[in-house]
Length: 101
Image 1 (cartoon, rainbow, N blue to C red):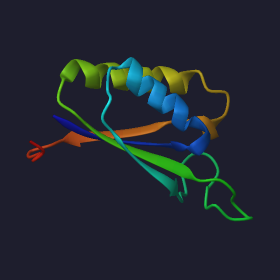
Image 2 (image 1 turned 120 degrees about the horizontal axis):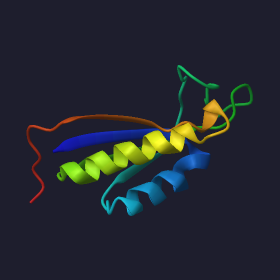
Image 3 (image 1 turned 60 degrees about the vertical axis):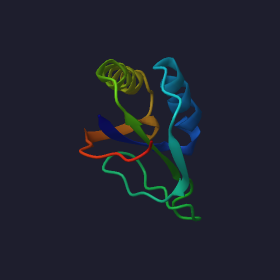
Image 4 (image 1 turned 180 degrees about the vertical axis):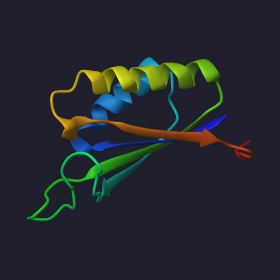
């Protein structure tokens, strides 16, 4: 099982949700108005100097095929953007324990 964080500009949030739906992933959490200073692209600090902000989408995926498809779709999305500020960042790691049921 994987825990996945996906970071993107608020303008790309609906694209990420669409990708999740295409991967048959229906359970996730969204944290809005995340201030960031990215390695690539402009900072988004939600102020007059650096307008805008990011969204953090967190999810847990049990199925390896869903994770692989999500990763492939994010990579393909990033290959086709016209501006580095549109990149979607994804990080994932293994979960040892998840108490949900």
